[in-house]
Length: 196
Image 1 (cartoon, rainbow, N blue to C red):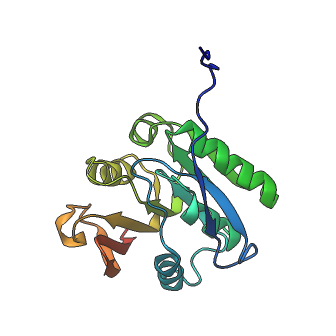
Image 2: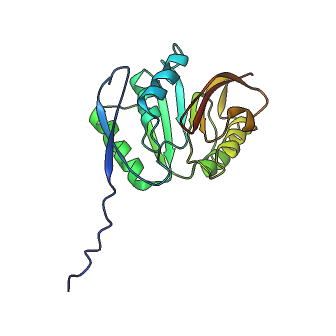
């Protein structure tokens, strides 16, 4: 009878393509997992067209980074600093390997619960935030409230959301102005700008 090896099974890996900037067309790996929905190429292209002129030199926060698709795209396009959070140890380790492969020194990663981090850590203001949490877990609205109330946002910050419901039903902070929105399949995505 074979004995169990004691090793955890290696999670399956998939690939995504960085679509613009310094690492354009580079392929990187990400860990597959429940609730993980890497933002598709077409949606990323649309988002970064909306953000034209806003990414280079920006401080970027990605609290539910997952595959790191948006995080890596922002770094490729000249973000000064980007901080990614995720509670999945394998996802964070894979993303760290991607940063090493790309030779990126201004990407920061933390394995942590995003809501707990936003609630308990000393905030510093970010210019651009990507909010793409797992669906059906009631994470988006609390994250938006914490970002606004705890001082994580620069006065005219841009905030991107992906959700399973229309942006108008999200109940986001009243001083966030909807800039653009679209729907693809079952996913609603929108870009907001904060009024100081």
